[in-house]
Length: 173
Image 1: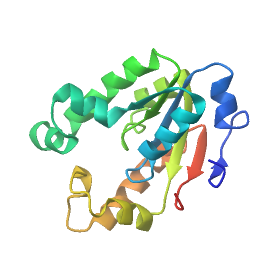
Image 2 (image 1 turned 90 degrees about the horizontal axis):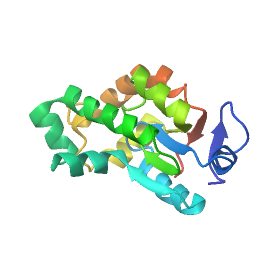
Image 3 (image 1 turned 180 degrees about the vertical axis):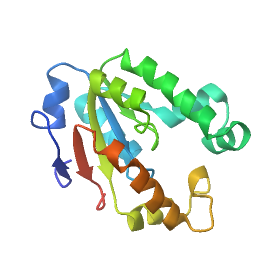
Image 4 (image 1 turned 60 degrees about the vertical axis):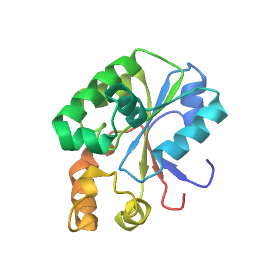
């Protein structure tokens, strides 16, 4: 993890925050910032359980996220996220790759911050667009101007993302 820039309040490295008490590590941030990829590496290095929230929701609902959005709407999906975060916050020793919008809800923010270390992965809109352009399963980006949508959502979520314990720039990931 050394090449990434880490900033934010807290005691030393993410490993220090987790290793001393085996709490959870929540990786938050916009889609395409590398949350799942980083979670896999981090869980392996820290010998913690990996939880991919989107995969958990897809398994529970027996359909992909894009279908959940299409058939039941974003608000239904956000409620599924909230229920999953409630359950995960009761556990420990997990590295959780969160959905891109999961850290926007104030209750989710509070639960995650109280039950672990929250690390927000960041990237520039151009990088996010490049990483997500070929992925039609991203329902929030199935619009005429996905770059504009990315910029709008990043601006809307910025204050929430800034509440993370740490920020890591993943543009070069």
